[in-house]
Image (cartoon, rainbow, N blue to C red; front, side):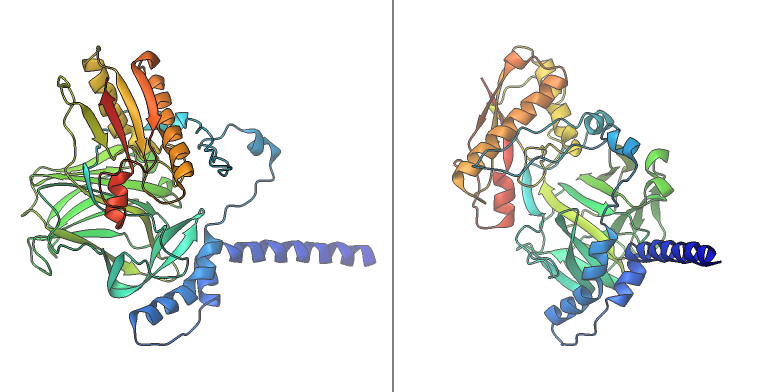
Length: 421
């Protein structure tokens, strides 16, 4: 009888541990349990309220479980290994994410050539409202996820945030928008595009993406166009993952990309927009989550199939992990364009120049820019370009093309240039 009681106790302890672990990764329970009730009447106290309710819970939500299966540990990685920390200003060479680049092999999105706004929240602190954004309704807060800060909309129907850009009318008739969203079954994030500042009429339109598909809607009506997502990223395959969204707008034609796919084409939108904001229904149990937001004017550099005569190509579409030489797969649109230029012009040779902003020390930036240029060459060679046609050089922050006093200036200085030799 004592032995039966002993095993029964062990069983109850095991079940209790499993139940406890289930609670740790449940965003609703954790956020609810950690909620506080701070009260002030200004925006920052409101942000503190949102942070107090969700910051501890959300951090736990996105922690990865440790694998105990030795077979799983031995399996080949599907994502690129992280680069080791920088020591003595030396940046380790990035390893190619073969699977990711293969997935994006037909990607044709090329971002605009002048960055108007780009924010990775590197100037901000966990638990605060980001310094380069404004809040028009609801509550929102930054939280660290996967070692980087993300923007969480936690309250409001609708919660509205918008990038702080000096001009109230900054979009041209040719622009691009990019951002990453985390799909956690929250209400979909919506980008609203306005034909004039503070206008709320039927000439505005919205774009939203969720596991069910992509939608373009006009004004407050149901008029518009929709498209399903490809099966490998739709519905359950969409959930609990980061997804890259890219929007290209040119003379009232709209294209929406989700990860490696071009999902939706709108041949003619309503009147051209001049600015945008982000709206959704914030929820502390399932916050709307996004990061890596960028707006650029220009786009689709349209060099494909043409003889190349320019002295150089300046690109902002080859993107890297923060402070690393790891190329992101969504860079393939620009890389595919460069490969096409090289194949269409077999006599051309390029020097690949890497440039950074002035964040960090000059020796570190010099090493980082060289490693990024080398990583681009490695990827182009993997795509079929003869290595003898390419050389590399890193300039660090020594050749800025914009000021380093603003986030848009820094974003324009972070670039890769292809110099015809």
